[in-house]
Length: 227
Image (cartoon, rainbow, N blue to C red; front, side):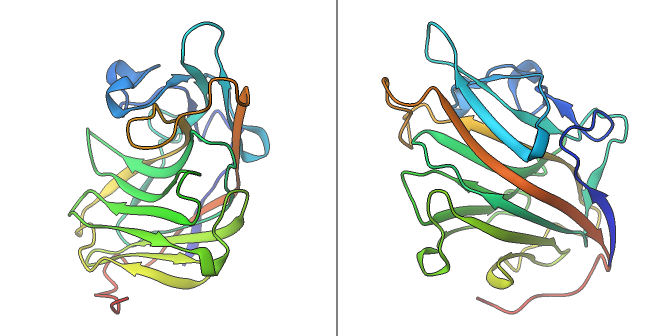
């Protein structure tokens, strides 16, 4: 497989900051999805994604980067493998994610995380249905943990690996012609399903995506083994 995308989170050619069709009217807020986000137009040096409490009210200025609308317009497609190295947040209310989006859907969640479920990674295929809430305490998943995650977007199965261990093969896949833009962001939970930041807690939440690459290979590798 060949590397076709190597993320530079300061690149204005690769990424658009603070604007996504996954948010109503392209942003800056998305209260309907239980988020306290007010999207920032800043890029993210060193892959540091932050949310900062805004003065007055309950919204937070949050980083979101997407390849949608960028000059390069990169999209992942069937057969690609995305690899990232991440450090999870520690603050309640932080909601980091790496995911895909196009035309109101085509969403695959490489991962989502909430520190109030300290060992749990949420991984989902919204294209053909299916998800797993993977408890990774034995693998060291916890607030502040650093690990590698890899997702293979197969036609017949989307497979997720943590530190080279297969943790879920959904045996549903994305189909032969799937493609979608990348999103990397930090949202803030509004308290509906996960803890929101304490009223007198930290003024800043953060997580780090140290690296992110996409490799391209066989678009139809066939079903993966069950987990």
